[in-house]
Length: 143
Image 1: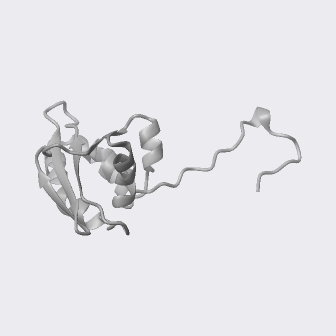
Image 2: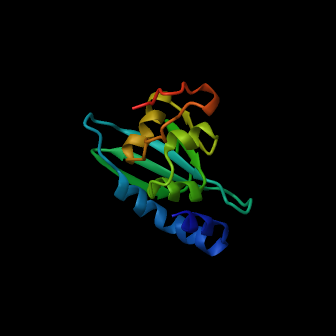
Image 3: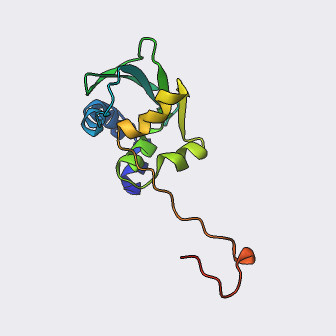
C-alpha cells in the first residue's frame, strides 16, 4: 500500500487517482441510520504544488453523489493528500492519526465534520500505546 501511495508524486498517477476518486468515494459510502442531507467538500492538494482538486459530496436520501469542483456552500470540509487517502482506503493509516499529525483536516460544522469518517468507513484503529521503558514496573505486564 505504501508503494502505491508514494506513486502519487508522479503527475500522471495523481491525475489518474483524481479521475477514479469520485467512483471510489461513492462506493465507500455507508448510509447513516438517521436521515442526513448535507453537502461536504473534499480538497486534495497537488503534490507538486499546483492547484488543489476539489470535490463536492452531496449526501441525501441514503446516497452520496460526488462531483468534481468546489461545493456550493458546503456545511463541512475535509482536506487530505491523495497519498494519505490511499493509505486510509488500504487501512494502512487511521484518520485520528492523520488528523493529529495535521495530514487530515476537517472544518465547518463540527458535528457533520466528525461524521465524515463514519460516512466513508474510514479506519479508526490506533496502534496500542505502551509505556516508555523507563516508566515500566518490573514484573507488571499490561494485558
